[in-house]
Amino acid sequence: MLMQRLISSPRNLWRLWAECARQVQTLRDRRKAMVDNREARGITLLREWLSADQQAQFDAFRYFDVIGSGTGKRYRIRHARTMGVHEMDAAGRPIAGWCFLPSGPLVTGDIMLAQKIALETNELATLAVANRFPIESGPTNASCAASLPGALDGL
Image (tube, rainbow, N blue to C red; front, side, top):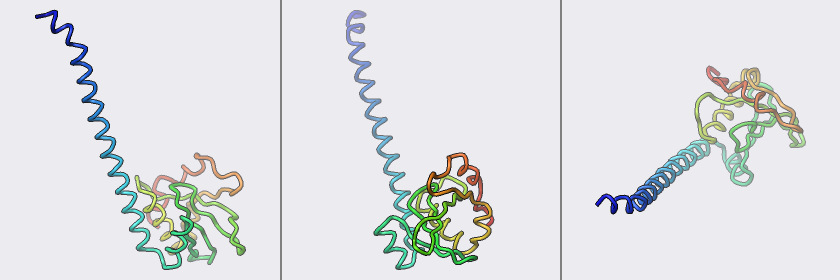
């Protein structure tokens, strides 16, 4: 009896390991589906706030342009979680990057919407808390991270 248990133990452990692996994969699949759903909802909300021209631009290029409320400058908001706002010159070339984010764990669409609203309603206060970076080299993660904790809170 003891000998049979010792002989079958590796098979039982293998079955247990296989079942655990299946459960882990199921949990990973469920988490990915939840994240994908959140991302899709964020983009849907963003699209509701975009003008027809901005929607067409976003559909074609995954970015859209906004006009700042204080200076009338044009900014391009790209589909990105960080370093996605570029100030544009009259010829449509990026001349500077701006890094500013709302606080909290938000999906990309929500971040882009917050950036759009901030620039269109209170551009000067937004730029006062944002980190500017040159387009050629881009910012380091540290220069962008400085604006993370609640940079857009209260704007």
